[in-house]
Length: 326
Length: 249
Image (cartoon, rainbow over all chains, first blue to last red; front, side, top):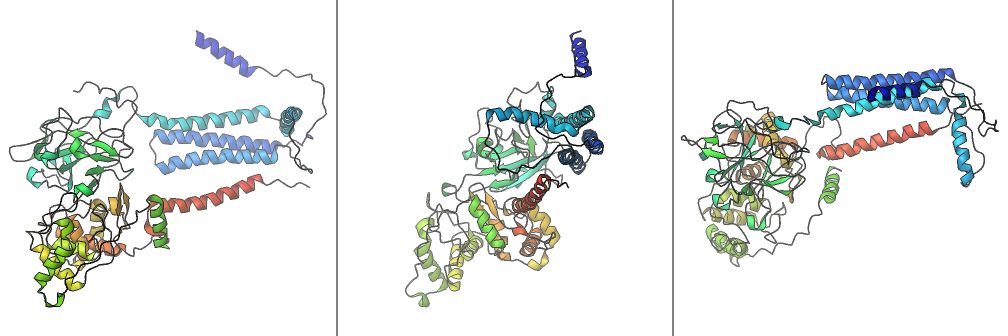
């Protein structure tokens, strides 16, 4: 009911005609220029084209076209708006040249500036057409710029952000699909592992594996048995921007060299393995999620549970308690 | 030009601390009359034992033990000029080799006798394939050394460029992992893959510049700067065109 009232008010507002003013005819500051209907049409056409290009952006975004196509559509829309402004500036606004030096500003002159702006539009005959075209272009561009916000993710149901293929009992395999054995994991180097029999494309699938001296482990409470024989497994996806953590800083002689760390090559977030992936440098805001491990009967490495936290780049709700796990 | 650009960028990113001058080499007085084994032992005692211990057992807070370093690591650190180091906390960097050739050989042989370390690897750079090497280099090395081996900076560490690394030194670095580099065993990088990596690093010393302009081979930052210089000139030109008044009769 209330909505309908607002709609009617809006229509009335849009539909009302300007009452002709009966002001005293003042002497013009800016001489009236000749009308230029062709330039007006050109401006309107450019603005409509800009609106179409912006709408095309929304459509391309919806059908997940290539980023080049998206960029082209947006650049086209902005370029057409710029062209419309240039044409309007050159052919629709009255211009004059000031022979004297620019005068000192005075308060009374400021009122005149308002009149100058108003009177500079004297060449415009179809104000409503131009206004409508500009409004259309503005709305379409606004819609185009807001559309990518949809990709910020499932705002109401974040459960998919916690999805990972790791379950207790799932074996770790290398890039060739061979099971990884505990005895094949050496210190001072690192390995990439995937879940056996699950998709490797999921964000939670890839792991980075390192081995440290078990006496050096300082894992958080509750993770005492997560690193059998000093073998640690972390999500390979950085918690900052989602790059692959693909650098391992391993000092030859720790007392005089930087501490060991898993480092992300994008923004150099550094995560310390022995403390369970705590951030020791860089922009990452939370530790690398750790996966508990166990060693099977055939010495193969097996997941012993789920990650210690959400995998992948952080989002607004990442510090809230995760939804009930199935 | 390339080196200059690299130097300026490196200065911008990290002001390298002034390296302490390594102490002068202590040479035995009667070097001519010593057997290689005795020469190695005396050079070790005079130049290495201060940090690595008199029998290469290492010293807390000074230098790591060398018992399992072997000829491989000794050959690498001495022939790159990484050792001797002025201060234990310094990052070793490529510099002038401070021992003479017979001295290097004697020291390498001496360090090999300290324990059970690996020998200097046997490398055949012609055996590798450049394309396989690019694949392996991208997977294992480019994260720090940059894809055409120009080096760079990773958290608190300067990553060396590989333009002066010899094939044997590349193999040694891969197997020993100097400073904070991880080490790669033969199960991680096979000898065949290593030969390909070496072939690729040799190619990367003078790569084909597909765009015609190498811009220091330093990746997206200088390329972006050049692009912006061009884009900025274009933008200014457009501003001038927009700002010009239409002259009317």
